[in-house]
Every structure is written in C-alpha cells, then in structure tokens.
Length: 185
Length: 301
Image (cartoon, rainbow over all chains, first blue to last red; front, side, top):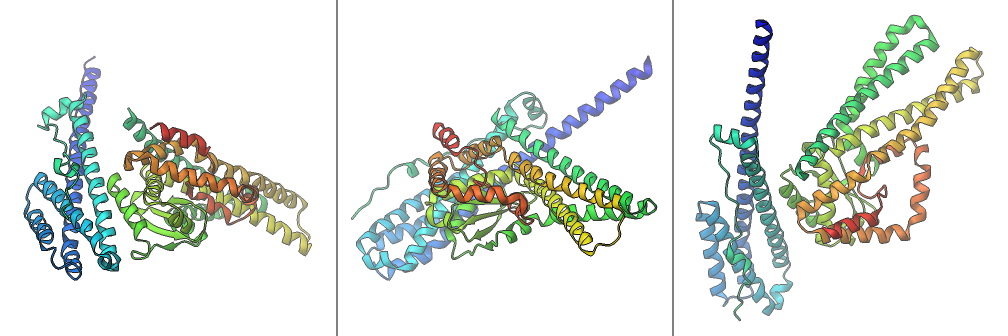
C-alpha cells in the first residue's frame, strides 16, 4: 500500500513541523516574558531613584548637618543610574535602599521632619516601591524558572538543543540587602 | 505538576465559556421558534431572523460591557490615584507579581469587607473593593485579597462567571416579560385565543422556575475548588499566606455578626431583575465556600 505509506509520512512530517513550531514559539514567549520582567525591575529601580532628589531637598530643610548620609544617598543614586547590567543595578539598588533606611532612621531625631507631610508621603511611596521591586524580582525569577523547566525537562530539552537555548541564571538578592543596615547616630 | 493543573483550569474555563455562549444562542433560537408557533407559523422565518440578530447582539453587548454593567449595578466609582494610594500600590504590586496588565480599579461604598473582579479577559479586567475593605484591612491583608482577585483574572474565572451571569440575566428578563405580558393581556380582557393564553402561562412559569436554577448555577460555578485555587495562586503571588489568612478571619468575624442580613438577601435574590448582575461578580466572599476550611488550608501553607 504505497499511498497509505505516503499519507502516513506526510501526516508525521506535518506533526513534526507543528511540534517544532510550538516549541520555537514557546521559547520565544518565555524569553520575552523574562525580558519584560527585567524591564519591570528597571522601571521600579528608576522610580526609586527619581524620588531621591525630592526626598533630599525635604530632609535638607530640617536636618542640614546630616550631610554625610545625604551624600551617601546621592552617590548611591548616581551609581544606580550609571549601572549597566542587572546584577550591578540590583546591587546599587540595595545600597540606595540601605542609605535611604538610614535617612529614615535619622528622621527619628527630627520631630518636625517626621511630621512633615511631604516626608511621610515619600516614605510611603518608597516603601511601596521597595515592595514592587521585590515583586518584580520574584516574577523575574518565576519566569526564569518556567523557562528553565522547559529547557531541562523532556521533551523540551531536545528542542532547547535544536534552538540553542540554555537555562538562565536566577537573580540573587545582593547579600548587602539581607544584612541589617548599621545606623550611626 | 501544580503548574499543569493551573493551565488545565484556564483551558477548562475557556471551553466552558464557549459552550455557554452556544447555550445562550440556542436558547434564543428555541424561544424564537416557540413565539413563531404561538403567533403565526407563516412568520416563522422573519421571527427566526429577528431572534438570531437579537441573540447575537445580546451576547456581544453583554460580553463586551459586562464589567461596566457589574460596576454600575453596585454603583462603583473609579479609585483615585491620590486618595486610594494604598489600593493602587497593592494592585500594582500584584500585577507585577503575576505578570498581568494592571487592572482598572474601582471602589464601592460599603462598610463590609468584600471585593470582586470582572471583565472578559486579563487585558480588560477590573477589580473593585469596598470602602470597608480599605478601612479595615492592613496593607498585607489588602494585598492578599487583591492577589486572590488577581488570580481569578489570571485563571479566566471572570470570563466564565460573566457569561453565566449573562445567561441568568437573560432568563430573568424573559421571565419578567412573559409574566408581564400575561398580566396586561388579562387586564385588557381581549378575546385572545385560549390556547395561546395557556402557552404563555406555561412559558412564564417555566422561566420563573428556570431563573432561580440558573442563579444557582452561578453560585455553583463559583465552586470551592475555584476559590481554593485562587487562594493558592494568591499565596504564590504574595509569598505571604498570613496576609490573606487574617483578611479571611476578619471577614469571618463580619459574617458572624451579620448573618441574618446575608440569608435574607440570598433568599430574595432570584426574584429581583437586577440582582443577577450583582451575582455575575466573581465575589470573593459572596458565596461562602466554607471560610474556615480556606483558613485552615492557608495556615498549612
């Protein structure tokens, strides 16, 4: 039965092509998701950096001689804005966060500053951004997990090799962020 | 494994939604057929064409405006960026954590803690919370509740619930029309065909029976499994089970103190013509899928 054989071959070939297309698209979708979540982290880090100048000018009005901490914050912001890779950005971001924490710590010594509405608003905004940064990092790692699972599990591993896709690295929390910041008085 | 079942649920919801559309469509065709039989079989084609156009537009309009109808029926207002900052922060955080587009946010005036999500897909989703929700819940609790609603959005629960509500709303409207037309025709006392009269009465009664059953269908659709699934996904988003747990505990406390009111509303609901719209809402707590069990499961996470 040659015609039957031909049909079987055609059907199988179509099936193979479909599976190839499916996996190709799957890798593209998952890869895009990772890129997207990466830019989301970036957006949030930038938002934090954007709030810093306003915060500094508010604090300056009440605590002029805390220039050391203020300089720390401005420097950390500069490093963050200049960082190129995501690892460096995350590291700079956590340094900025630590510097900001010390600003909020010294605010305890300035009751007027603490009661300032603008300052309170900024404090809340920065706390919310901190949350969003950790959520975006979480989603980034989730996306990488899905991607890696597809790369490593059968039959994905087979197609990953065909398309030259390899598992990606998770984004680690910078060690500084985990440590409790030292507060000097 | 968990991931797989999650995707299965989404597919399931999409298939069920499609089937519901077909059910609604067929329902209208049958109705048109019955009407043409009652009036005059010679009008059969005209009536059928009218009923096809009507059913298509009904399904399309309610499908595309479901979120607006739901929001209007509870008199929800858009949340303001400045006034409801916490709400926006929590929702943005959850949108980021789930990788979904930011839903539109609404507030409804009520001292009770409640929330719902609506819309036809994640791109057109809305999340609405009560003012009580914002007043009584802490930041973590609010985040837990919004994460739960976000999960309904992600799972396509909202589309299915919306379509079920379309069905329920339709049946109640038709039941009303039949019952009313019956009322008017008997008032005027026109010499109508006795057979037609009986037919109308039967259909009216049939719809009157069907409406509460359909309403019941909606509450069945919001099955326990769905709620548990949304709870689990919510925890996956926040990575903080105590938030949602303590929100549920607060709601449980409210339920105990206002039990009577709830029972009353539930029993009367099928009678009201506008209520089905209220039910389409994927209410987080409107049906009670045993809140204690949910708390227990969350505490084990």
